[in-house]
Amino acid sequence: MPGTAPLPKGRIEIDFERCKACELCIPACPKNCIEMGTGTNRQGFAAAVFARPGDCTGCAVCAECCPDVCIQVWR
Amino acid sequence: MKNKAKEKFTKQVFSRPRSLLDVSTHYCPGCHHGIAHRILAETIDHFDLREKTIGVAPVGCAVLMYDYFDVDFVEAPHGRAPAVATGVKRAQPDRFVFTYQGDGDLAAIGTSEIIHAANRGENLTVLFINNTTYGMTGGQMAPTTMLGQKTSTSPYGRDFRNDGYPIRIAEMLATLEGTAFSARVATSTPAQIRKAKEAVKKAFDMQIRGMGFSIVEILSTCPTNWGMKPLDAQKRVLGEMSGYYPLGVYKERKQADFA
Image (cartoon, rainbow over all chains, first blue to last red; front, side, top):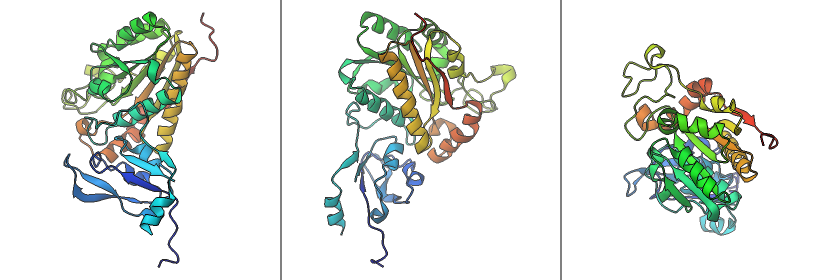
């Protein structure tokens, strides 16, 4: 239902090759926007993906929790 | 819609700090060293110290940290980072000097160095990463290992009759007159990460104002050697570890009254 979907207030980019799939960003996101992906990067990890861009508020909490600093946030 | 949204959000609110080089680290997935590195780099940028900082790298998992920072580094022998930093700071007092040490480094082999550096009131900043084990060498028991914790050298759990009790470094150093700032923080929740950054900022500020020795103990995880998933390791820090190692500021000097 496009009429009721919330408008995104920000966006993030996850560096696919840097992500080590530690999953720390997933409970950190208050809107549950991030999920574990299925593709494997060059390090051999199934990197996290920005699964629900529509809910993102650009709060940058995921980026603060990322030990590998592979999330960038725009607002 | 997706492309439109991409164009709309142009103000970057979070990116890699300038002092942290754009390289991949060797740390295990979920290791909090990365978060501590980012906090450290952001604080260096905050005080605009990148050109005048000299870091002292430890022996431990962070032994290669000079590859990750855009500041000058000295590599110290195991546990001797405060002694090396003392020499660096006394030879070049206008430089900002910090050490970054783990618990096997600072609380075991380097206990003497850290106590006397603090007692002399050396104008240094120390970041102490406490993950209750020797991470790099394969998860042996450290002086900070919790009672009952199973490690590769305490396979039946740490027993105080044999191995003594876990050592609380932040409280111990807070009792010394030369210490200007002593705090214990954690990096397991977003709120704790922000508090940790505030504590590191205060510790930097102490050195900039010439107040004396400052230390920030950071409760960290070691998912690999604890045999846990990163999220379970975070829960251990929030539960068991925070119970024995209470978070907080133990000493904060208000004015340079020791001179």
